[in-house]
Amino acid sequence: MKDALDFIKARRSVRKYTPMPVPQKLLDRVVEAGLYAPTGHNQQSVIILKITDEDAVRKLGAVNGEIFRKINGGEGMQDAFYGAPVVLCVLSPKDNKTEIWDGASVLSYMALEASSLGLGSCWIHRGREQFETEYGRSLLVKAGIDPDRYEGVDSLVIGWPAATPTVPARKPNRLFSL
Ligand SMILES: Cc1cc2nc3c(=O)[nH]c(=O)nc-3n(C[C@H](O)[C@H](O)[C@H](O)COP(=O)(O)O)c2cc1C
Image 1 (cartoon, rainbow, N blue to C red):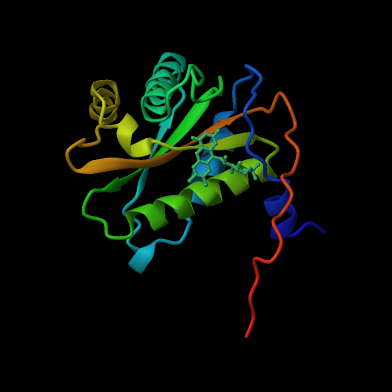
Image 2 (cartoon, rainbow, N blue to C red):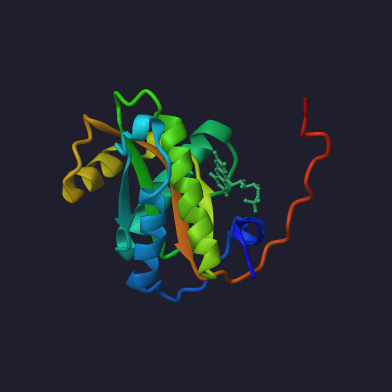
């Protein structure tokens, strides 16, 4: 019998996807897992913007890549979403005092559920910056989210893995006991 640890160990950051679409039913389960993630004071104030529109996913991936290049320099990351067909963006009200922790909780739960369904995913940073851009703000407005009230935390790209990444070794001496 598989338990949660098996799925935790099986989850890997996937950075190469097939163009095959992800069925809505599976995406619904991934999102549901995020909605069941714990949040500070059970506020449940973080929200998820699911983007499956191909043009929007690619454009936001390019915007995120541009931010990456501005921060880190270099040529890489033209598409920071690695060609994935779906991106689940986690956002929080700006006045949420546990925004980062709540967002990380939601992202982790969604990544684990995706893994349990055989889907690949990758956590993508620069979630706040991507929704501060004109294009990011326009997506929020289009989806009915107030860009002055909400800010991005981070995102999770989802798709069918085109390559199986190896498991990075665990660093030793990370447990202390009393
Ligand atoms: C806060 C955070 C930000 C991350 N941002 C990115 C990112 O922008 N791009 C990316 O390819 N991976 C990103 N990752 C994925 C990590 O690089 C990945 O989890 C790590 O290398 C370990 O690999 P694994 O997920 O397969 O265990 C991020 C992970 C976390 C937790």
